[in-house]
Length: 390
Image (cartoon, rainbow, N blue to C red; front, side, top):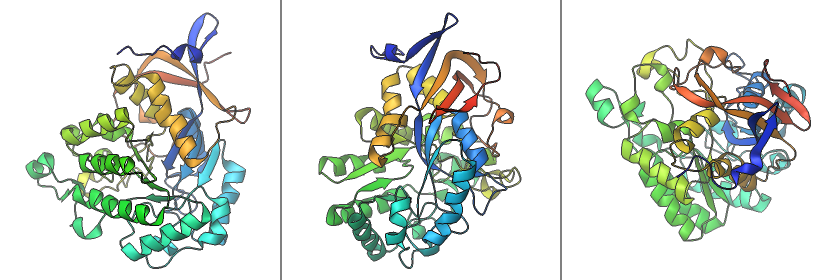
């Protein structure tokens, strides 16, 4: 397969006899901008500027904040900061349960008009009855349930994939069943309630298979994976915190199943799960470091280099996964938003050049192609490279 398909010419623009590419603004339905509550990791201002640096003009921010957006009063703290500080479109999630504790539903009625969907991201909703009640309420409000799927009793203190690397290096493993078992439950509940359901950051082959079958059965389900699950696996692990995220990097077999999932449409979106932490929090190796890596500034170059240039998918397919599909599923308009890219630019990923306050990436030092030169949101320049002149 060629790097570009026959339709890509519509994205080509010429400036001073140089060929650039003008793409619609990308959309990331899974980011952590950490404010309010954890602004030492990231702020809405730095997160939104980092997103623009990566060509993203719309993002959905996760609710594991302080205060947790489980009431309108708590959500308003976040909305006010977004209004004052963001350079792109931010669409926040509200929590499914109060405090993300899984014990009682959040004030979903009051929150629904102001949020993109409901999620307890960072935690799986453990109770079947609680998830059923959440789906019924979300369905009545015309909103989607977006789930971090994880069965707590199967975690057993693990922090990387329960595979070859964990056994060889004496690490506690996280089994794939902890992810797919809860997806299996939620598929049944989504079919029962009729609630629209989206699965966060799937990482294993069983999840792909379950979602593929659910779609064939007519369940209103969608899902996402992340660049690191498509481009890396447990064989790439090093004893550094920048390789630690949740869910973890799994086996080569899992990675290949995810690639088949994006190719055949089982996986609808690629989201970054951009999750910045302080340098200290990521400096304690695989066992002691916080879970999470940054990714919104590197996603397109990595995916373009690792998937498009290698002929695995077309540029059109990549745009479906990072722009068109997430916008359609989450009802987020693209408007006139766009970014301009030099796809011939080659460079090594250097966290020192990130706008994000978080610097931990497993892709540090990797050579990629594709440099964002300018990003425009609502007619205003959200990012422009210092050396780019139109």
